[in-house]
Amino acid sequence: MNLQHLALAKFSKTHPYPKGNPIINNLIYEIQKIKDRLDEHIEAQEVAINRSLPDPYVDLDDYFRITCEIHEVLFSDFSYKTDIKTDEHIQWKEYFNCLYDHCVIDYDSEQFFHFTLEGFTLFDPPEPLEPGDSCYNLVQTLKELFDKLHAEHRRVVSLLKSPGDYMKFRLSKGRSHLDMITRRDHLVRQRDSMNDIIKWSI
Image (cartoon, rainbow, N blue to C red; front, side, top):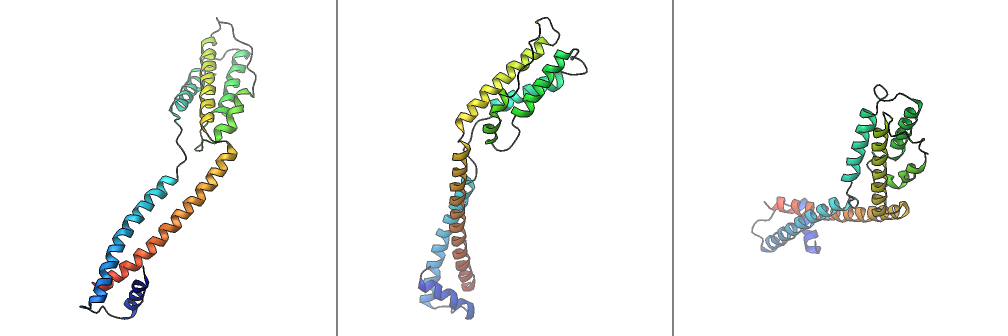
């Protein structure tokens, strides 16, 4: 808004609209055109603000597919009630439970992938079961699934920023987001002032 528009805004607070005044009518016309452009700018700012919030996308479909398979085998198929008969079975069951607890991501933030990657090497596996053991196939299946999960976990980590870079990225993004909101709010205040003048003229 220029000085004439600001003066008209102040005038409109204390005087009735002088119908037929060509100068004021021209100012109202200018203000309407400016307000229409502001509406477009504000809408564009809203889109930019919403787009600025999400982090870069990493495809986790394979990761969660593998975790679902592990969950099904570990907690439904490899059961204390029906399958576990020996101390060796218990050792493998608890080994896989520990891997699950320390390695499987169920958090919203992908940054947790960095902090859980080492979980795959925290525990030593028990002695291998004999191929004829009743739980041999279940143990082999879980070992293969955790190996796949480990590989997928490493792939995801390779696509993510390091924790330090991520912190810098979030700080920069937060400042940028705040700047966009501040600019948007400034435009909204201008538009509201123009709306008041336009309503005053009707």
